[in-house]
Amino acid sequence: DATRIHCPKLRKKVMTAEAAAALITAGSNVGMSGFTGAGYPKAVPGALAERIRQHNAQEGNKPFRINVWTGASTAPELDGTLAEVDGIEMRLPFQSDPICRDRINTGKMDYVDLHLSEVSQNAWSGFLGKMDIALIEVAGIREDGSLIPSSSLGNNKTWIEQADKVILEVNSQQNAKLEGMHDVYYGTAMPPNRKPIMMTHPADRIGEAYLRCPAEKVIAVVETNSMDRNSAFKAPDAVSIKIAEHILEFFQKEIEIGRLPKNLLPIQSGVGNIANAVLEGLNDGPFKNLTAFTEVIQDGMLKMLKSGTLEVASSTAFSLSPEGLKEFNENIDLYREKIILRPQDISNHPELARRLGIIAMNGLIEVDIYGNVNSTHIMGTRMMNGIGGSGDFARNGYLSIFVTPSIAKDGAISSIVPMVSHVDHTEHDVKIIVTEYGLADLRGKSPRKRALEIINNCAHPDYREQLMDYFERACNSGGGMHTPHLLGEALSWHQRYEETGHMKPKN
Ligand code: 0RQ
Image (tube, rainbow, N blue to C red; front, side):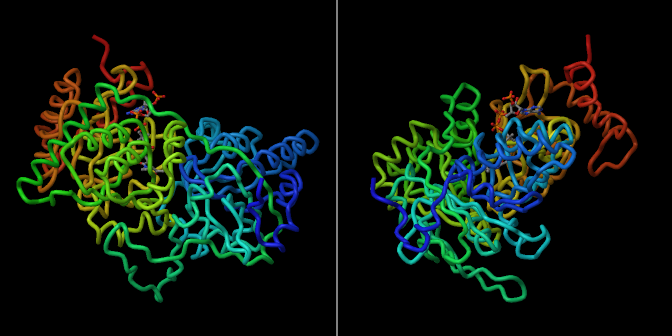
């Protein structure tokens, strides 16, 4: 097998994952690669977890823990394995691992949930403390020591620049033809020295294909050969197909009215089954020459690129199923012309989302009758994943669409509630809500008009009466009429669910 390490200086630093893990000290802030299960380090985190396990067995009173900063979510080989040995003191800025989630929600791990566009700026500002070491997966090392990024870029540029020491994992499973697909922007600066980002189309290239990395910083190089996480998607179900239909119909109308061009505006789509179904629906629809300005490329987007529905996709990472990855690898010559991977501070940049006028489409956990959206917290207290890029795109996009099934947990939970138990996207950031029952267009509507639109168009029929009853009593309560509420009752649905397992009152 031909080596992927072409820099002689760095070839001398090749060692085992165990030897590299031994270079990470307790209490370190470690900046790792990885975004939605793509491009995360595969070997050193596991070796470190084993070292932590052994340490804790001997010196449990002085636990060995590190702080883990990434691009976004990773995989069991990183978050899972380190969380399992209670090796993570603090995690940021996004995760979706079940063990990690359990540690966060039982109070054993601190979690800082951040807008993904803002992480690198926070790091540069010093708001997060000093980064000690970067642990980055790459697809190869060039002769001059520059790095060929792998299946995600995330915060890698920032982590390499900020860390004194860098550990590289060179993964030979990553397709060698990823080389050239990346566009690493080196023009970022901190205020007051910031300049406009000269991008007016998702296809614009404004940076370099490689990550710069001073060879002196590299303290270890580990060779790996394993696949990204690649979880499978469910085939679109009846609910997600309905949601996709409502969105397509809405787009058609907006084009007719002249509020959207025929090829729409750059689309951003979140992760998950519903988002993927919407993309499948778009692919089957009448649209042509679409563009995407997004943070993850999932299977649905590959299909759109292949069929020609989508001309180009700008992203920071892939999030493919095993079949999606196979399709990508088999036809990479086609895809590499149409996909650009950027650092997440660029893929999610508020300036660019606003300038390009993106159409943001993201999932939600619950939305209230006035249009405030909770994307992160179950019953107001338990973390699900994190806000991710949804806030970057929702607030700054031309249209922000939030999609959700009208109910969760077999109907024990209404996704539409009197008041959300946590707010991620305020009423000001939310323009369209879609469930399988219909679409609520909140643009230009006052809170009371929005309530009627959401209850009548989106709520599950089993909950409509209960929602309308709350709304009407709130309106007649003698309280404020701008956003009428019954404050003592606003969160009673959640309280009831916690106590009885159902949001509906018994009988
Ligand atoms: O849990 O599988 O255990 O039953 O939440 O819900 O309906 O499958 O929807 O996969 O699209 O996820 C908001 C979490 C939606 C996601 C969220 C339970 C439900 C199920 C998942 P089970 P669905 P999705 C791009 C943009 C924030 C980040 C973001 C998310 C599970 O979209 O993380 O948008 N968004 N990033 O049963 C209790 C409720 C519930 C509920 C759903 N009201 N109460 N449980 N569930 N609603 C990507 C990145 O940023 C990287």
